[in-house]
Image 1: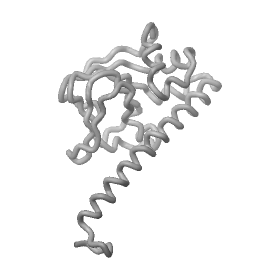
Image 2: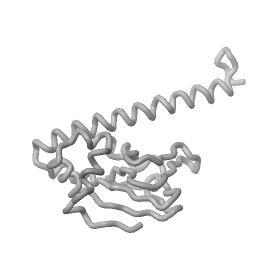
Image 3: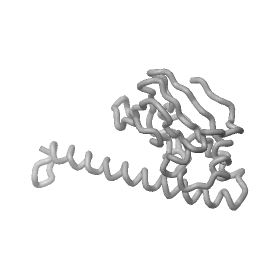
Image 4: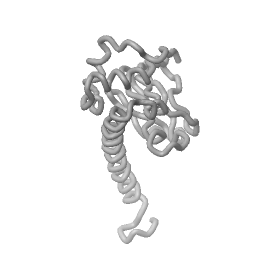
Length: 166
């Protein structure tokens, strides 16, 4: 992985950040605060971005490339759109990483260090946390619905109509 230092001068990157769903709700000053807590990380094909079981406080926003998310060496998600977010669970519950993220192609991510959110001015902190947690709740809800559908489909395939294992 190659990594930029914490970003002090966002330049034209602010326009890119404003196109990302949850960041689009923030004004330029708030985005600059987020940017200063962030690093650009570049990964080669096959490189691990997140390792299951690791403890870290970064939330990742995919800027370019493709990422697969695996759990117990099984692919559970594939991310390929600018603005796709991953690593959110560790930000919510402060537990070790629950899955591994691997770059499928050369990949660029914006890595936001959530540990720095507490150092923001109180007014910015309240707004950024509200936007961030609402966005994370939407992402987790969407993923939970998808997982529930997959689980129900799998159970239908291995259970008899009476709910007893076939």
